[in-house]
Length: 268
Ligand code: PXP
Image (cartoon, rainbow, N blue to C red; front, side, top):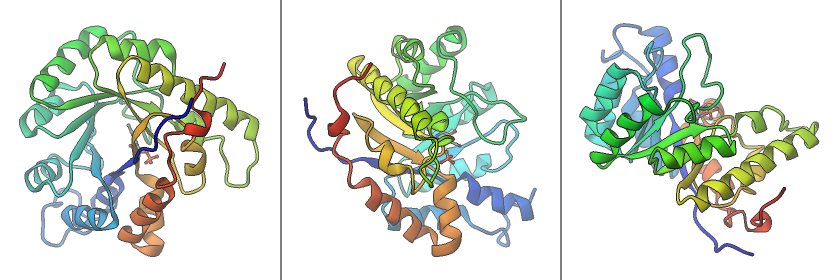
């Protein structure tokens, strides 16, 4: 079976622009001196062809600050996808600024970046009311989960509009030199099957974590994708060529997506 061609959207995660600013200007991030300026970064992403902006308001506020979220929500240069844990203070910000999307993620203070997906299957009590409150405000809710059938079923049962399939386990073994391909193929298969499962339950399928200019070609084998959320690789490339170019190069790579049609039948 072949799926029809669909255009894949790019959400650029700009947390690391704030990481750079906070390294130099902690406590005075709103000062005129504080570079890089989030709105300039956001506008450059838009010029490069980004479809949305993703920011993660972490409980420890290590990069994106609440004032950044409020500014991006007010100016809304692009649709805003707010990543957040179920922490009540962060949830209060989301309920107040009403981003277009919220992606619920697990959060551990000591981690460098989000490691592992949300355990939707066992967090029912804390997730269900929050998902309902966000959705009642018209916010699309996505759960960042591993491509595990039980987690995907749990996300649908919780009423999530979308899943963001965690591509970290795949990206960690998909090296630019092509080595460890068996591991990468195995992880890719989990993502492909996860996408089929989420789609069959009526949810939008997004993906993110560790996607870069090398592995994107394989990520495009995942069917039913709607949005990819990509941060580290784009911001790293932007150091060499500027953010507008870095974003547009990723969009060009993504334009080859044809719904994962070459692998669209389910694999065992
Ligand atoms: N999606 C989610 C839910 C994330 O937590 C992250 C990392 O903040 C990303 C996407 C982007 O990952 P990366 O920076 O590796 O592209």
